[in-house]
Amino acid sequence: MLPFSPAIAISAAAAAALASAASLRWAARRQGALSSRRVLLAVSGTLQDGYVLRRNLDADGTPARFVGWALVRGVRLYIDTKAHAQCREHVPVTASGRRQNVNPAAVCTGDARDANVYAVYAVSEAAALRALIGEPRCLGMTPDTALVDLQAEETSANLRSFLARSGSAGAKRAAVLTVVAHTVPPGATPAAPLYVKDDGTRVTSFAGCLRAFAGAKDDADDSFDDMLESATRQAQSVANGSGGDVYGTTKDEPRVNFVDEFTLASLLREAPGATGPPWGK
Image 1 (tube, rainbow, N blue to C red):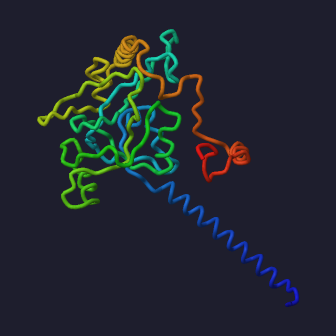
Image 2 (image 1 turned 60 degrees about the horizontal axis):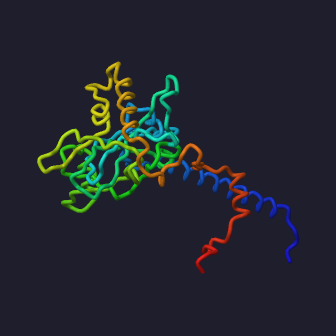
Image 3 (image 1 turned 45 degrees about the horizontal axis):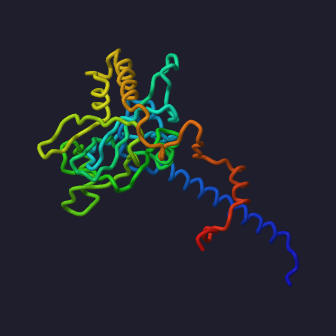
């Protein structure tokens, strides 16, 4: 056995410190890469420019960048008016001075003649993860269920060219991460198409459809908010409690999207084995 050497001990400690520092630098670089790496995200509605939830697409030091428009086939647009009193976001008519917020729900129909124009942003991965947490009900993101029509005139030329180059020659469709609704929110109102193409495609787009829903010509009009509120309350009264309650939390049901480290430690201490559920064996 070799005799103890202080020099060797110091060298070992220094090496460990250097390794630890290198590990921290690697983790920081990786975190930085993840926070700055972007995904293409197609959104329709209140995540677009000009609406309050647009900020959800920004991350610290990595603001979202609008890259173009895309016609996505196979989705039908609804206006979710939060019609039912138990809806988490429902605002009672008696709530003085408070207006009912609405948002779109683009539901997959399987019919290529249903089509919606999406706004496509380059968004950091971190922001994409958080974009819908705590926000309107029934929404989610899909990587390839909804497809961009690369031949549609509504799809921006720059985006069409980029997506086409990313696939096989002659590709007519492409997929980007897209916000859709998993189901029609209870009591939601179908949006009337803005126009119908020669091939029978019924085209919607949130801003235009919201104006039509409100009966307004211009959403910059001073009376637009009043018109939208009136149309929303009318739609709520027509819904009259119709629709199921299987999807979407009520005001009394928890919607848990985050867990802190202290609570996580408690959950892990009490967690069952992960090799399989204790039932059905």
